[in-house]
Image (cartoon, rainbow, N blue to C red; front, top):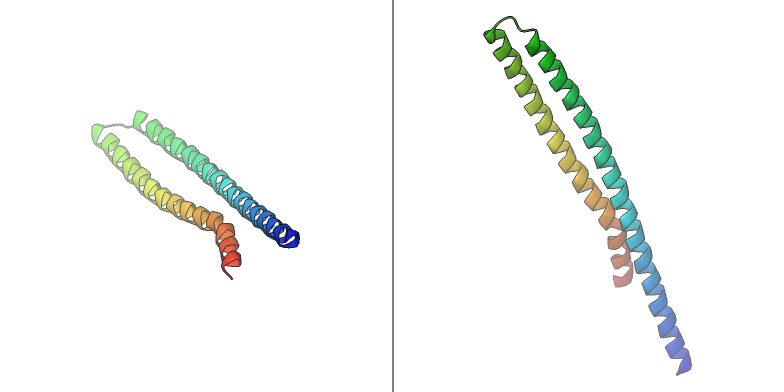
Length: 114
């Protein structure tokens, strides 16, 4: 009887360790994903700020209202298109991060089931 309790205890300890390791790997993947997203957002913010500064400089040098409206319209269109592209890319990054973070848990569950 003692041997069966010892075996059950060992099995329980191994399951706990395996689950802890899977959770740790999952958190590591989340951390990498959030770092990549933060770097991407920082880069996008720098570019957006530089584009806005350039547009402002052009507006200051505009010779007429029509020219100023044209500059502003071009800037708004470019900023909107860049934002849409960035939002799409960030969505892909979040989905990839979720897949990567779930993968260690999925492997651990598959190991337990088989």
